[in-house]
Image (cartoon, rainbow, N blue to C red; front, side, top):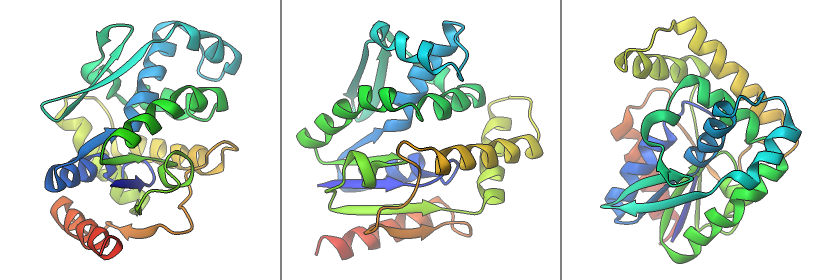
Length: 220
C-alpha cells in the first residue's frame, strides 16, 4: 500500500507520516530529506542556490543512499550520514530552491519510486500524489494556516537553541509557500483525488486519528 501525504511547509507532514507508518507497520519515506541533502551539498560547495546551471552540474558528484535501520530512515551523502545537519532553516531554503529545478527532481524520481514499488510506504512531500506516486491508493493533502505552521516551526527551532523570531519564521513560511506553489516544475498543489486535512486546530494525535479515518475510508 502506498500513502501519499502532501502539503505546504510546516503542516506537520513528517511527524504525522512517521506516526502513521508506525501505526500501520509500514515504512516512512521523508522525501524532503533527499532535497535537503542536495541543498546541503550545494551550500557546502559554495554554490549560489539561484545558480541553476551550477546546481545541475554538481549532481554528477552526488551519491545518495537511503536505508531503513530499525524503522529509521538514514541518508548518506557520498558515504557520510547527514544526520541532523539538513534540519536547519538555511538548508530548508536551499532545498526549496533546488527542488524547483527539473533536473534535480528527475535525479531523485526513480529513487523514490523504487522504494514505493518494493515496500508499503507513507511518503510525504510536495508532489507525491501528483508526480511521484500518482497511483497511490491514498492521497492526503495536509494544510494549516501560515500562522499556525510558523508557530510550530518557531517552537521547534527555539527548542533546538536556534536564534530566531516568530516574524522571521513566518516570513520564511510565506516565501516557501510562494516558491513551492508557483514554480513551473511540480508545484505544491493537491492531486485531484486527494482528501484535504486541515490541522490548524488539531494536535499531532488528532491529525493522525483523522488521517487513519481517511485511510480506512479509502481502503475498505
